[in-house]
Amino acid sequence: MPSSGVVLIASPSGPLELLTCIPQRPTAQPPLLFVHGSNCSAACFRAFLPLIASAGYACYAVSLRGHGKSWQPNAFSFHALTGLNAYVADVEAALAHLETAHPDAAPVLLGHSMGGSVLQHALTVWEAQRKQKSWRRTAGLVLLASGPLWGGTVDIARKWQAADAALAKAQSLAPASVPTSPPAPIKGWIPWLQSFAPKSGIHTPEHVRNKFFSAEASEDAVNSWFRDSKSRMESIRVSISMCWPIAEPRPVLAAIGRDAPPTGRKVLCIAAEKDCLITADVSKRNFDAYQSVCEGEEEVLFVELPGSAHHLMLDIARDRCADTIVAWLQGMHLKDVKT
Image 1 (cartoon, rainbow, N blue to C red):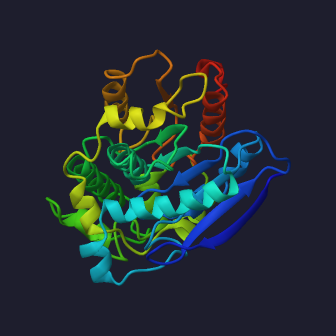
Image 2 (cartoon, rainbow, N blue to C red):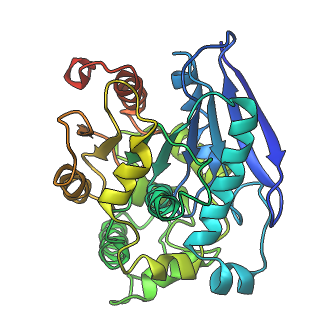
């Protein structure tokens, strides 16, 4: 079994939580760094990392500032001063730790939801600054129900509101003995903006399932996310910045190109069939944007996981998601991964 742990690593701004899951025997495989999404923390990967580490990959997951057990800015600093580049700086601190632990191997980056947005933005920035900061080697990028190149905040806000409205309607039709939730959402941006507050649209396990999990997901998966992974708030500045494009496909592919594995694989886009926030068609459009500028058939690949909702690392397709990532890393045919 892999060895799991948690460490606090230094960053210019403050200490960051880093989950580790290391194979018992050293291998020549690249290390993997996972970055969580909005309103979340590295804990969302805790049950997922051993599935991949068992295949010989050293796995790490960082909690960005303001999330998990990483340092917590005050509300003003977090909402007004914490932008995408601040999160990129946190990723850089985690990569510096990986470089010390694995000096001879370029890492593969994996981002879920907003974490995928952060990584796409980071690779675009790093490619532009390559001469000054050439140490940021990257051997691949896996986008897990990721925010798209064009940002996507407005679309996600609308879908967040629609999910709230659907849940409120379902609760209004429930028997009177069932406790009622807050009133039906007000039309517009207000319900989505409320998600930045501690009491938000994910303030109960029922609301969490409504937005992040499928109906088939276990109660334990939903409750464990609510208990261990939910962050106190999300940066308004980051979300607003994603109303506009945050990355370009060519620089992202170029940043990976020099350290891509012999298979030539650079980007894997994984979508969740039942994702109501970053729907599978959005992930497919993001894949299409990469495919339109790539040079080889294997450079950019797309997989849709049936049955899963947004948190596919914890939902019913969790094992298949891990198997798909390992198959991609090893150059196997992704259609051979069993459902």
